[in-house]
Image 1 (cartoon, rainbow, N blue to C red):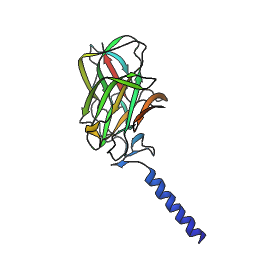
Image 2: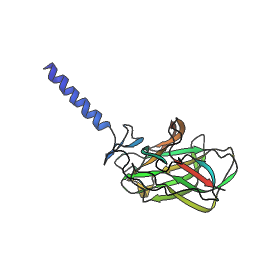
Image 3: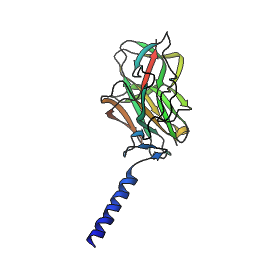
Image 4: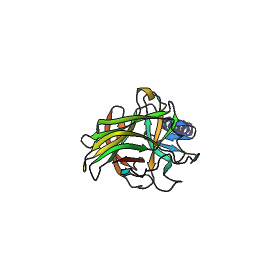
Length: 223
């Protein structure tokens, strides 16, 4: 009887453990807390990088690798999800940068992969507010994202007028869902040039909090 109860307890424990693990789709899973997304099958397809700095571009910040077969990590990223997604929560991430000189941002480049739901997300440039993302300076939608777990396509948008930023002041690049992408599960690929733990911001169902880890892959370009 005791062995039976022990076995039953083990089965219940395993069931609770498995159900506590968050979303899974086509070999892509989240961590138990939902924050991190991993493609367990490895790189699925190679796409030529869709962005290279133009001759006239001034690179304000960039953590993309120069190696064309590893511009960023294919298979590890930070979860971007809406409330109606199979992840079951609204997750977003903000990556900080501080310009060394006054500049005007004309282009933001990110590496975001699609898992399921509506294929898209929203990227924004945000001011700082107490070491967290604050007011939105500018934003744009991205769509037609490559499958998460592939490499090395990027998404970007140019702005002719641009947004002025100030030297020595922290700003944020944010990737998130909106009402139009409430069922989305995407992932922001981790960068491949600095694998050390760095501070960034995580949005969890209504509020930004400070966290740390390998930063998402992005670049900020201007003049």
